[in-house]
Length: 87
Image (tube, rainbow, N blue to C red):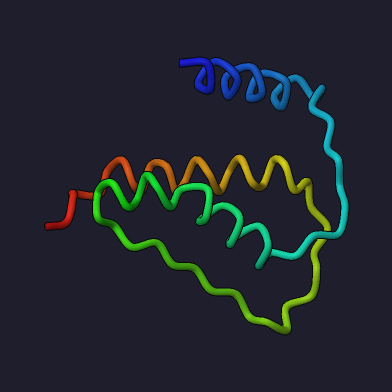
């Protein structure tokens, strides 16, 4: 519930133009691998295999890594939540 409230507050800040971004160079492969690793136990409980792949030659990109991590985490969490357990 707390995460939902945080999301709504952040959305309100975005709409009001008051959201700050901490833009820096970051590797997408690190973002993907860190996110998938953080959900490994949740996926294992439902016997779901998580995998992700990025081009090893991909250059770092300018982004707010914390916000992108949150976005990717929300996507993976929803995918796990709405994927049937494998047996």
